[in-house]
Image (cartoon, rainbow, N blue to C red; front, side, top):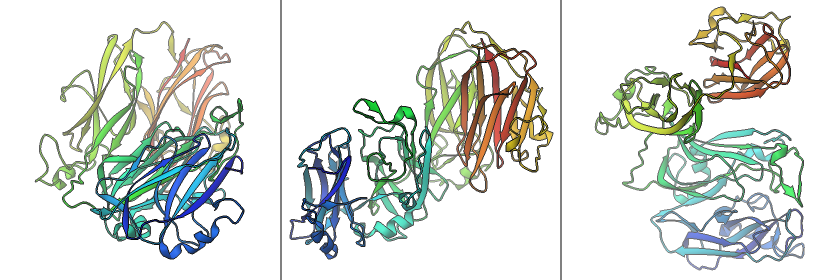
Length: 580
């Protein structure tokens, strides 16, 4: 029966019952009191390390002993994970032909995490089931992993009230196989096969992703959770094994929503936001993955292909003629760069034995084309090379259903035969009046005395006229030549309380020599309409924002645009208009 509230972490040791070496091929946990069982971890302790664990139990008069992290004891080697359970997980069968070896004299240590935040403590007797066999085709190693620095005080801060906190780290495959490859017969310099994907967070979790970063520059997303739910966690078996080489990296990243609206409700009352960091309790947070490693399988096809997925717009999302449609794409095994940046190198380096004119096997870099309502690759299209982009619908497009098609292209524009489409709906133009607030040709530089954000100004401002300019009716800024931009122009339309300001802004992938931050803002008549700070480096992003106006401003009021950035990056202000 749990006694510590709201969290009780308890470990129990059980002698391994078999007298001969065996391989575990499956584990299963049947939680007894699901309302209080937070998670279960099944570990194996090697025979030479069992002494401290045999002495740990019962010292406080209760079965087992209090334990944190994954159930290990201080000054003892890390235990090896055999399996476990979290809410939403199903039966834990291992990939066919694999198993995790356990020697006679080993000890099973099961960590139970009980949470009684919303449940009264009651006696629990959960069941552990384990299947074994005498031999397997490929011995395996399974282990939990995270950034060790996150475990230190202050190592993974999640400030109170922040709706979008992000932490990420990268670890080398060499390091993982050096630490954990032994049971799978994998040496540090060996390649190994990855079989599963897994992410673990707590109640504030928002998104989680595990990505393989290959030495050749391609990236493959292993697991990508866009809408975290604590009650739906699972270890996902990959449809195809993934080959990991010793020079590759693996990136684990998580984000959390610590806003007031995303807090736990206890006894009908929603808790207030509080500062959170890494911890074992339910009110703490984690960002955790696990790996299931074996030697590669002889004769197995470990080749990989690019893919593209249209995340936005959504199926049959509604727009009107002339709208800028936010296009958000997810690429796998495909690196984006400007057309022609690598010439025909991708074709030249591809293996002629596997490359065909129709499917372009072996091309993992390039750009993409966007087509509207056509399967003809020679038709009019847009060429782009950022994962997020705006596609403008024609002003004369008819109401009804229309299809956007995204086609991957090699550096020399050849179609790779890899594409995806989405159907959208165009409605009749709404009755509301839209008035342009600015003209991309009318901006002028402000002095420090005129700048409402002068506190952001660097000591030396360098921003020549040719670093910002009108491009297809939009304001485009090249920050590699402009370290601080403060522009102004008179408003072309008046504003009244109750109007809406429509802001459309885009930036490409942001890069710099080291970690930095960008600041972008728009003001009207000294009212800050919108501002944001953006981490650098970060991926391309798009902003399509509607801001209610609660003040009045006549025609000619000063409109300001501010941009403070680091590195050779592109920002584009596509639209700033008044909607009545």
